[in-house]
Image (cartoon, helix red, strand yellow):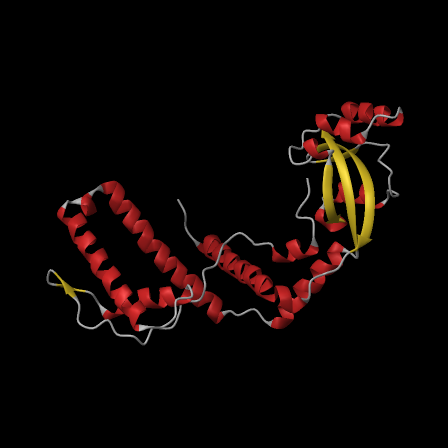
Length: 266
């Protein structure tokens, strides 16, 4: 029925594809010569695992290097035991291993593509301004009752005119997120709602409800406007990282769509 209520939430919203962080630089630490039952653990494996721990906030230290070394030894022991048990030959497990390999390659491709096709600050600012304009300068505190048919909505309106409490009538709403709270939707900009709902809401005076049912794809609404207040948008710099993430997701999605359009799928 409606999208997130605040401009900040709208600007922070994600998109279709979640992008991982850009691959970390190699750690300068050295694992030393490590073999387990004659199998060498590559320095590159140590570097990747070490960098991952640093990305998670672990400080560079001898203790961390030793801990990473020990963890890689433990993993190698378990890997050898799994192979000895023939688990790598199990079709279901082999399929999972292949999917993991694909995931690593796909992540690398996405990181590389985003790096080669950066989104400019100007693009991010334009997106920010567009969202601000769409959301408007006012937030509305409203409530609604959502029902299946126009006749049900008209009956609710008739009952309101007879003095029934909106909060009590809201219990028959089919919106599970608001029915038990008097139909309350909280504070939202008009742009957070679908157009028919937003149009009706912005025309209401404080404390008034719609005397004609409002039709959306979700059903029929009776809407009450409780209050308004100025909408304060978060600063551009404060949500720039989230805007960049969403823009990068859109870049990747466009790339995927291009590949799909050129692909021969039978």
